[in-house]
Image (cartoon, helix red, strand yellow):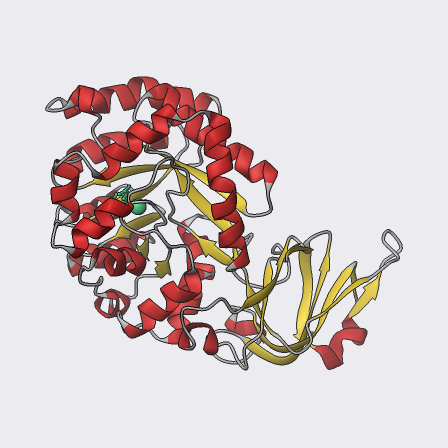
Length: 415
Ligand code: NIG
Ligand code: FE
């Protein structure tokens, strides 16, 4: 017998995400219930077996009940790569791209990341919070319960800290759990044009200590890309971050094959992200080193680029996560149900692989697989209820929101 203070019952189909807890690779249970205590799952199984396993406890004699009314239940989505905090917007670039301009051409002409840097530097902390809150509400409504957010539109110590303080405040102000990633190496700021090594020194000598001493980030990121930061510069930054206890999670081989995948294996990153141009041998090295490959099909979709060769990567045995890359320039979308559709229809992932990518493997990409990403006893009770006939409809019937209720740490937080 386990003690519970919450039961979610009358679940038509439960996707636990743990093969040992149900049928098939997703561990599916029909006619299911989930029991939780203090926001953590204590039991999952067939509802018919609930009474023999679960009881109210003396400490909390009242049992809350949520009637799923036959809905499909699954783990809350883990969006492991976002640039959610920014000011300004770039809908003009989106229009220019439709007329043939590339992302890099727009950046070279003064648009791109640097235009968002100008707007974000000019915004105060409260303004950044107010801009981010509705985006987070939309993410939550679409089922995201845990999110990584990067800095990287400050590119100066005070502005990077402002972005990371914004991330911390957002985590306190609303239900989506936020995990900040320091991305001071998102672009070379104009004052350091042609002197990128000096900017790398600034990151290592000034920004990193300031961020780490304030405990404002958990991860460290670099845009390792031709014309931005080289593999050697990325290695210096990621190794310095490791010295401050920050795990590497970085942009690798997005537009040009530089060897970011190999670097991710070398520094034992949590994840290497994008990988549109990664060498498959590099991805195989990632697999050996336990690095998660985070694919961001929304970016390829939004930029009109070919998709990452997910199938080839999966054949190496590497763990593949899916994330939104939500940002104003290359992926202005945060619906992970739609990202799953892109993964299946464009990258030929199976619907099972896509669902794991947006849940458990997203958690792995954040080093949070013991806490979130699947519905297993001991983990947080982060659960979505969806009005679909079965879980496959989540990515099959696309472009609409199937999430009707969101539970975070055992509390109903949406609607
Ligand atoms: O992941 N590649 C670098 N960073 C973002 C784009 C950010 C921006 O354009 O503002 C990305 O695609
Ligand atoms: Fe990104």
